[in-house]
Length: 414
Image (cartoon, rainbow, N blue to C red; front, side, top):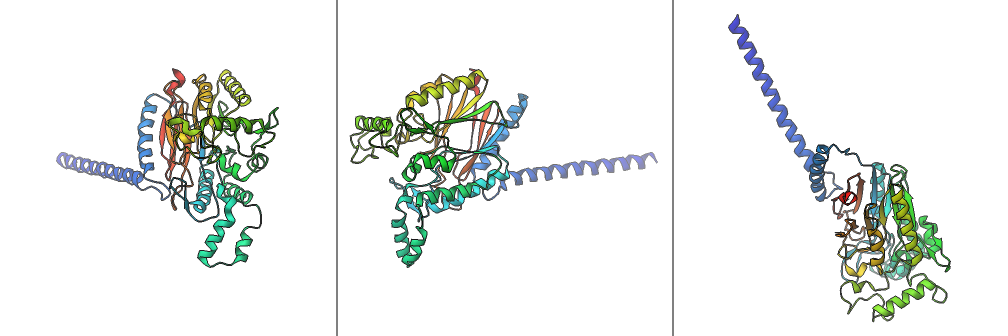
C-alpha cells in the first residue's frame, strides 16, 4: 500500500511539473506575440518604444515611482492640407497635400479613442498653395480631362478659409478636451490674424501699437500643476501686417534688410548666409518686447505656484534642434528667458522644420523637440504623437514617421 501511495504521489508531481512547464511556454509565446503583433497603424519605431518603456518602467518601479502619467496629450505638426495633387517642397522633399487631411482625421479619432486630456497643434494646418488653387486644379483638370464647370464648382469660395474649415472638421472627431493651436507662416499666407483667431480660437491680444499678437497660456484641469505656454513667433513679421501702419512690420523689414542681402527681391532665400544666419528669411519671425515681458511674468508666476511648463511655438527656439533656416529670428532672447526658469520649464515643442529634431540645452537641461510634419508622410502612413507627462519624464509615443523618445526631467532637481 505504501509503495502504491508513493507511486501515486510521484505521478501527481510529474503531472504538476508538466503543467507548470507548459504554462511557461504559453506565457513566453504570448509575450512574443504581443511585442511584435502591432496594429497596422503603428510603425516599427513602436516596437522600440515598447522596449524602451519597459526598461524605464522597470527602473521607475524600482524607485517606487507611480507609473501612471499625470497628463496625456496628442500632438500634430504641419498638416499643411491643400486639395491639390502631391508635390514637392522648394528643396525637393515630397509632400502629400490631400493625404494630410486623412492623417489628421485619423489622428483625431485615435486621440478620442484614447481619451487624451488635450491636443496640441503646432501650426501650419493648411498650405500656402491654397491661394494658387485655381492653377493646380486647372492643371489637374487638364490631366484628367475634367471640364471647366467642375473646376469652378470647387472654387465657390475662399480656398484658404475652406481648407481651414476642412481641417477643423477633420479634427472635430476629437471631443474629449481642448485643442491648443499655434499658428504659422502658412496660416498667414491664407488668412488675417483676425480670421485665424476666429477659426482656431486663438485669443489674440491687441497691443498698444495696434497690432494683434497670439500668445496665451493654459493650465491643465486634469493636472493643475502643468501649464502650457503658447508663444507667437510671428509677433514681429512682414506677413499680414499693414505696410503703412504696422510698427511690427517695420521692425521685421529692418531685421531682414540688415541680415539678408537677398531681401526684398528673394525674401525667402537663405543663399549666401551661413549657420544660424540662415534664419533671416521672410517665412520666419520674432518675439517682440511686450510678449517677452509677458512670458517672463507667466514663468515667474508658474514658478511661485509650483507649476511646471511646456512651451509651444511654431518655430524652433534652439539651434541643432532643426535646420538653421527654420529658427526664430531672436531665439537667443527667448532662450535666455527660458534658462532663468530651468526648474520650471520641462520642454519646448515646435513644428515648422518638417524633418523634426531634438536638442537638449546643456545650460538649462530643458528639452527642445521639433515634431515631424504630417504633410511629408506618404499614405497610408499617418504621422502624429501621444505625449505622456510624468513627474520625472516626458514620454513621446510616435506614430508613422514621428520618432518615439523618453525625456527625463532630471534638470528639475539640479
